Amino acid sequence: MNKWYIEKGPESDVVISSRVRLARNFKEYPFPHKPTPQMQKEIVDKTRDALFSGNQNMSRVFRFIDFSDLDMLDKAEFMEKHVVSKELLESDRYSGILLSEDEQISIMINEEDHLRIQCLAPGMQLTNAWNICNSIDDLLSEKIDFAWDENIGYLTSCPTNIGTAIRASVMMHLPALSMTGYIKPVLEALGKLGLAVRGLYGENTEASGNMFQFSNQITLGKSEEDILLSINNIARQIIEQERTLRQEIYKQKKYRLEDMVFRSYGILKNARIIDTVETLKRLSDLRLGVDLDIIKDIDITDINEMMLLVQPAGLQKKTSRMLKPGERDIYRAELVRNIMNKNKNP
Image 1 (cartoon, rainbow, N blue to C red):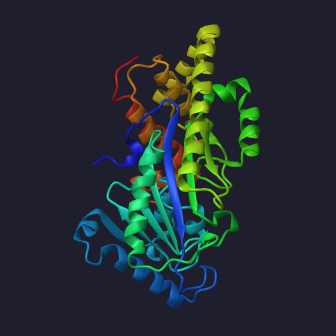
Image 2: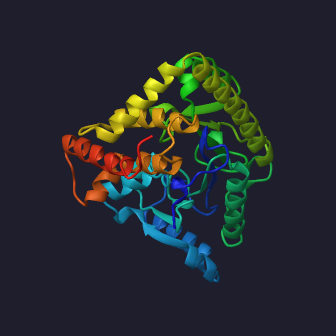
Image 3: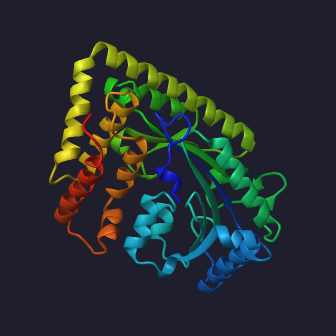
């Protein structure tokens, strides 16, 4: 079975992925920065029981991972796959993950909140991601009494999550907006609309490879449907702007654009040493070339696979050993060459 992050979804020429995340807390326990180690373990155990007890289907779909027992390399690989957050990666609390087989659904336990129920999907699929998250939330709420106030809604560690406690986001590839400089006013407009803009791995990360993640910041006083509709409408406006600019650039600067794409294509097919930043930049160029039908022998799923495998933890897991930065750059180049050269010339 292919993992969700390899697949191609709707509007995948611009939208890499959609994500919906729900924050929930046990009513009977203090928020995660306060519980004792024993309480943390109880929260993990009760969440497992709530998902698996009396539900044989869930035990076939999900597996439990004791996050506290993993080494840093395994933890970092989960973050590179967007399965867990940077917060959980760096936490010293006893924590766990309930993870679906295709890694599309994860329930982080003892992160910033007791539970973070997350669903990811390739392309523009916010509604599908929400429906899955909501069904998991309904199942858990049958056995867990969540912290809730009739006037406010769900209670969370961070005030910006209080209310529906939903975060909806889309990861978008915006090379044309970036190249033309129009990305700056777009980001400023999003800020005025109350949206957060982050990089490839969420909060406090940079927008490598022209990847930008947009999400709502406030949940209080807004329904889940309103939030999803707002993100969806804004995303579709950005999709149209990006597509229009791509066509204008290709029409006006055809040879310059093709030269940029083919240079990156050639480097990826032949480089012997390449770091993560350059690889993501070249893959961004390549993705643009594929979407504009300039490159015909590479599929978006190949690019999705490379984007994951070239990350430091993914590389080291694949080699089953720790690599120095210089060794990673050599192995990264070899891995990319192997994927690129399994295809024919353009």
